Amino acid sequence: MQENHFSLLQRETEKLRGDIDKMRSELKYEIDKVTAGQRLDLNLERGRIRDELAKQNEETTDLTTKLDKEIHSLKAQLEAAKYDVIKYCIGTIVSISAVGLAVLRIVM
Image (tube, rainbow, N blue to C red; front, side, top):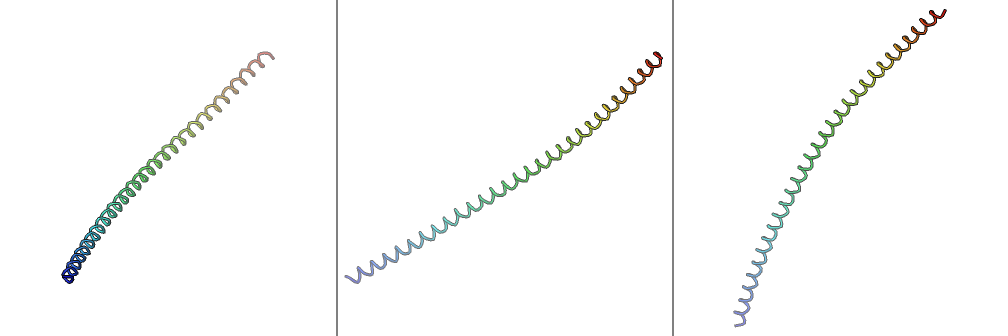
């Protein structure tokens, strides 16, 4: 009777060990699955961030180029305006000098 009880307990223990091993392997599988999913999500997010950063860098480069062109254009316009001002100043001085010489000639 005791041997029967002992063998019954032994079988029950083996069954429980089998169940524990099965649960342990299922748990390991689930943990590996979750870890793989998280790793995949992390890699996808990293790729998305890398793409977004590349897009922002391209936009920054485009804006820098556009600003450089506008600055160059404004500098050219400023130089043209300076040239026009100098031209008109010289024209005005020459005209005033001519009128002054004419008046001086009339007076003398």
